[in-house]
Amino acid sequence: MKIIAIDSSGLVASAAIGENDVLIGEYNVQYKKTHSQTLLPMLDALTKMVELDLDTVDAIALAKGPGSFTGLRIGSATAKGLGLAMGKPLVEIPTLDGLACNLYGTDKLVCPMMDARRNQVYTGVYEYVKTGQGPVSYQLKSLVPQCAVPVAQIAEILNGYGREVILLGDGIPVYTNALQELLTVPYGFAPAHVNRQRAAAFGRLAMQYIQEGKIVSADSHAPEYLRLSQAEREKNEKGHGNISQGNGSR
Image (cartoon, rainbow, N blue to C red; front, side, top):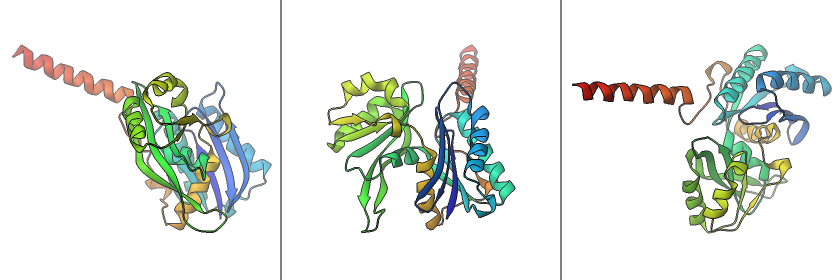
């Protein structure tokens, strides 16, 4: 089974090609460019480098969300375009699940955090459960499904488990001081090579999803934002303000 995986949900633009349990190639960039400038050129360079025959690809995996609104739209448009052009299905991977997959097999809790602004994070809580005796025998289990919550709330949840936790994601540098004050359980931060989204991890989960029949057609895919964009929030707040002023004038 051969998978193209892409991710542009956060600060990193990432593309990968995997076949069964072999990572054929991966391209990650986090440097002063927008994903619209990097994602397609990266994918084009990667497919040429590994001499990929697009007809042999079984599916295209992508981060479904949450994440950067612009980044998710770019990834969604890229995956939909590829899927339609190639006649291939898409595999939608929840962003926080894909990020948690970086720490495969750990006996610690895994808590990915992406900065959602306004003192909130996109986050979730995961653990790995042994499911068999095969070479890849641990399965990611969601204890708290991905959500958008204040940092204090997820810290309280983690404290309630009473277990050591590994934290990762672009929200960690933003809220390090708050986490150090709030967490009472043992914790650690994932190192640089596994602390951001990697398309290879999304591709790995996609293999499992395909076996479970979790695929969608390219034209039916839509990102999952978890909350309104800033423009939509401001519009709603402005609307509520106008209503309030109108009621007051009566």
